[in-house]
Length: 50
Image (tube, rainbow, N blue to C red):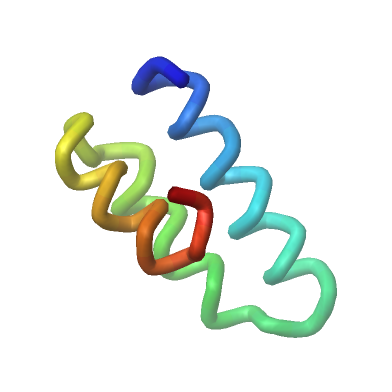
């Protein structure tokens, strides 16, 4: 998965979580949008996507 695909997948997860009743997840959206590839990998690991 390339960097932009990972970014999209993470944003989908964040928006779905926020919409389903976990509004604190939306706080990660800005971090995800600004993250470089290494930071995205770390965020994905926290979300259990890697």
